[in-house]
Image (cartoon, rainbow, N blue to C red; front, side, top):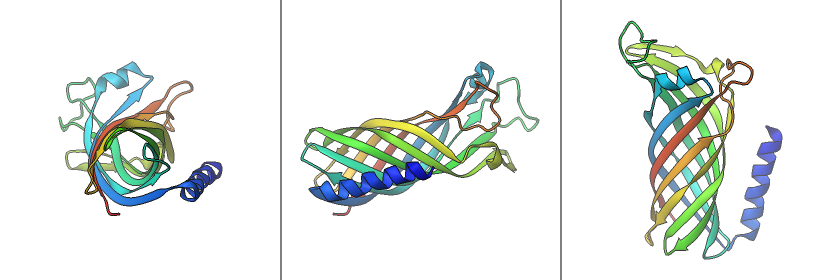
Length: 201
C-alpha cells in the first residue's frame, strides 16, 4: 500500500512540475454499479444498483491535446439481489449490498476534438464502509471486504469553454474485494459512471 501511495504522489509531483496549465474543479453524478463473480449462481442472483459519486478533480495539461486528471471521489458501489432468485429473504424485498469507497482515479486524457476527450487510467478505492440493507433491516458487513480495490477506468468527456463538463466512464474492477472468497474464486466491482462538473479556473 505504501508503495502505491508513493507512486501516486510521484506522478502528481511530476505532473505539477511539467504541467503547462492547471485547473481545479468538482464533479458529481450517478453510479450504475454491479458486482461480478467467478460463481455463476452468485451472478444469477445479483442485479445492478443505482448509487452516486461526488468529489474534486484537477486537470493538469501538458499540451493542447494531452492532460492528466487526478480525482478524489466518495463513491458508492455494490449491487442488489434479485427477489426472483432462489435465495429470497423472508421480507420478500431486494437486499442491497452498499459498498462505499474513497476513490482515487488518475485518468490520462487525450483531446480528439475541441472540448471532446477520451480517457484511460488506473483507480484505487479505499473502503469506508459496507452494509446490507433489507427493508428496515441493516447489517454492517465491512469486515467481509478487502480494504482496497484496484480497477481500470475508461470513458469519454466533453468540456465547455465556461468550465462546465460532462463525463461518461466505465470502472472495471481488477482485484478481488471479498475476504470470504474461496481459493480461485473472486468478487469484483464494476460500474458505469455519469458525471457533471465544473472547473473553477
